[in-house]
Amino acid sequence: MFDLRYHVASLAAVFVALLIGILVGVGMSGKVDDAEKKKLKSDVSRLNAQLDAAGARRATKAREQEAGREVVKNAYPLLIADRLRGDRIAILFAGAVDAGLRGDVERTLSDAGSGAPARMRALKLPIDATQVDGALNGELRSYRGDAQLDDLGRKLADELVYGGDTPAWDALSSKLVEEKAGSFRRSVDGVVVVRTVKPQAGETAEFLAGIYDGLADSGVPAAVPVWSDAGLSTVDDVEGPAGRLALALLLSGSASGNYGLKASASDGIVPPIEQLPAGG
Image (tube, rainbow, N blue to C red; front, side, top):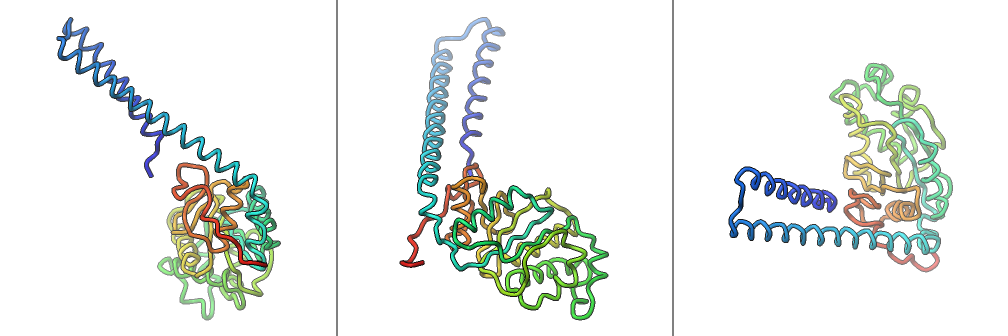
């Protein structure tokens, strides 16, 4: 997505360089002929006009965003009510639990009528691949080795979504999980992924890629506050009403995309808002 701020900065840089060029040229040659003066004045005027236009577009966009935030803020209780009523949602932390983000996500679920998360798991990262291999026995032996880390991640994603028998989580929880809540008794209707560690590399990156791809392919809505690297929808400000509404809409099955208030929110502040069916 083209960043308007970058465009304004680029125009300003060109403008400054042009003025410097004029001054240097005059100092070196001692004079500038009339035709050259007219051309330079024309270039300066054109750049000034472009700067003014770019600044106006940026101001207009800022006003539109502010207006959008106000609309969402004022209508938030009505728009989010019952969006997730009856839905069961899981939370997966890629890294240690962030109490603030957890509170924001749980407030979203509560405001949308879902209640407490069905389950929450926080992964210890980076992983120790040797320890992971050592815990994979029986039918899980086929997931041993670095080449199988992607498939192992997909296996864990499937179990996180569908619940029931969860041999991979059972075998690996002591190696991979640093905090947990809720059981795997039933399937969930959506997943929120929260990454609290910096981007990983090597074995851990391969393992996480498998989890994210597995969630993206699971058929249930999966959303990520702030970040996405695997086709998952994103929301960049779950601490505010607009972000919480966007998260609830994504989990309820609205159009996937990147939503929020930052430049990376290429699809708008919130997904398209559809009216809830009567009584639901």
